[in-house]
Amino acid sequence: MSTDSSPNKDGIQPIIHLTDCIVYFTISIINYIGDIGMQISRFRIYRAIIAGGLAVAVAIAIATDMPVIALAAVVIAIALAIILERRNKEIVRDERIQQIGGKAATASFNTVIILAAVAALGAALFRNQLPENVVFLGTIMGYFVCVAIILHMCFYAYFSRKL
Image (cartoon, rainbow, N blue to C red; front, side, top):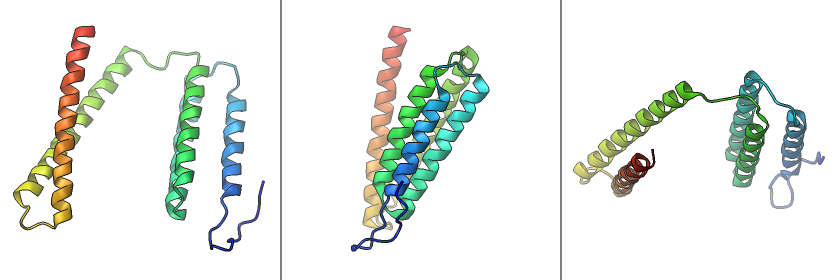
């Protein structure tokens, strides 16, 4: 591993040691998971570790203004999550958990759509008193709300035929 953390001639600190740590951490987790089945509690702990590591890596990327770190962390987290899911031998979701997740997703979607629609409507109604960039953002948000509702209707129609 590289231990040099002094800035180079451009004033940018090398991130080699950080990426070395991320790669080593990823390989050690993959080796630790192994080919054996795991219990649900271990599965949840590993998932929490992956999420925590992703959060730390994104925070470091924001603090150092290096989006490459965040991109690498997201790719590694997705790979680890896929490996973790494949190694799990127990049932992680049953019908009750799936129904709770569906209701939570529906409630979240509806809440976000309503809040975004109200914000877009507010930006449209008060466009004379608001800065131009806020009005533009409100217009874009209104379009996203429309697209999300249309997508929801299309998926609803598709799944109502399939199921």
